[in-house]
Length: 250
Image (cartoon, rainbow, N blue to C red; front, side):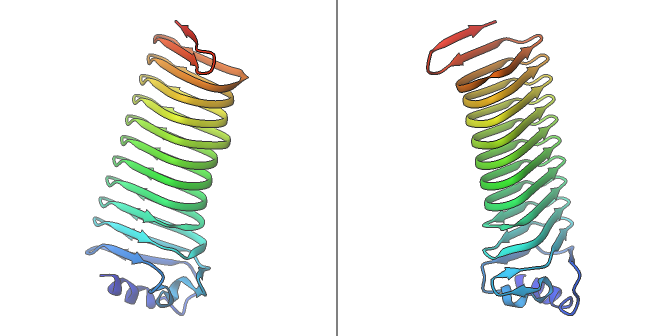
């Protein structure tokens, strides 16, 4: 199937604009650097790709495994299929899916934007100046990430973060799902739920606001600044300062 895909985009080789490719039948698979010299539509220059690309699939999976560095923007869209991205390095990566799982592994970007309606999102070993994940009903899981600014938002699915560090601002927003994390750090936090619980173990921050209407708040704090607001209107708040073992229960 990969060769069929390559032949499809060769038709765009004499054009300078961004590439738009649609498939209805098979999966789209691009792997390694061996085929990069055949992707003329993406304007290959050495091991770099200068142009932008948009790849769309109606019902099948998208599998993108690339080692060259993209200078342009890449957009992947799927209605019902899964989207896998591995070893991506580029300027901006936008991934959209209605019902399928989105998985991003071992990737470095200036901007990573992920949006799904009903599928879950898995990110592991990612570095990005700007990370935005929106999952209306699916679970968001981020493991081992380094970001400057991050925004993770879900309506009904849980948000799970482990070993994530933000050098500036990190927002975790959820309506009905829980927010859980381990070994996290941010210069500035905004963590908010309506019905879900907030549970962050071994977290570090300079300033933060943790708030929930009906959920419980459990924080295990390694280090924090003086600017912090922690409020649960109807739930239980439990704060543990790890080094001093100082426990406040409400």
